[in-house]
Image 1 (cartoon, rainbow, N blue to C red):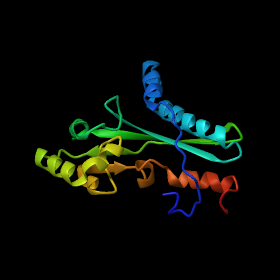
Image 2: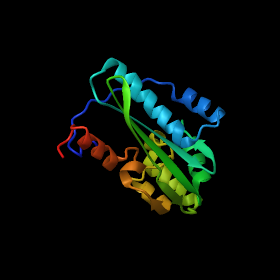
Image 3: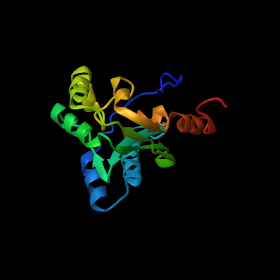
Length: 183
């Protein structure tokens, strides 16, 4: 998305223990919004240590359904279980962005798109899993809205970039405000 918006950037792996951070946040009763911000901040802060003059963007996304937090499925059996648990229910994608520069957090944003899955058949589920395959393992919801996953839904509230993990318009506004992009 950033490339499509005309930005030049470098991608770096932050190397934070996301599972431990989520587990601690959940145990402490921290909201999904705050947990997503903590994760995004940890990523941005870790990368910013090695590039203190750079503007570093950290992002994270949590899927919340009926109070449960979902992780990316480790295998296709778990992807099937995810989709079965989400079927005929509404869930929220808590999508957090944090920007660091000079060792400090200078901006943050949380978007919370809501998606309602339809009550699809087991036959549809099997066909969907076969069509999308292991690409589903890279998505917290075990779906790819940008592909055949659009067929899973009855309703979507929120913008597409936030659903895909990056609230693009707020980020572009921040970048213009800070002179990274032309106004």
